[in-house]
Image: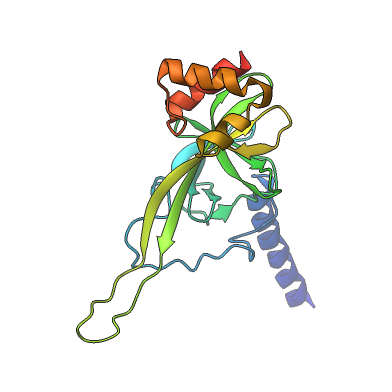
Length: 218
């Protein structure tokens, strides 16, 4: 009986520690939630991360700093308390603001209804422009014959996407097609188009996009 009580106490302490470790980030997802796959190819060329190294970051209004890195391929933030603790992932279905490497990453809902991670590149009181960093994985291919060469899986950065919040908290993807791009601005489309032409701006350039959005919302 005494042995059983001791085992239960130890289990409770261990479980409590694990739960608190997750709760300190406002989550209960535990280590590597089952809805995310972490079976990444070890020998792949490149990296799924914007930065391979963990960097100190603040999460929401926490006064503490945590070690964080952004997995752009899987669109998740990986977090650990320190070098000795296990990695946990933040749940994108919850609201987070992560100040990491001079960027402010947030979890938001896209117009499609899906949730994901973006970072703010411009905002005012009611509107904002966001950038989404993307990484793709090209699968490995095995040599079909002795005359062919096997190719390793490869991570590579792909074009960043931009999203706008017109004030309703839903993110609308900025189209690369000019006609669809100007249609975003409805009745002001002609004025925006004239501004872009006059200033010789490109709609797929980050700095130019910021100028366009600032002009529209001014």
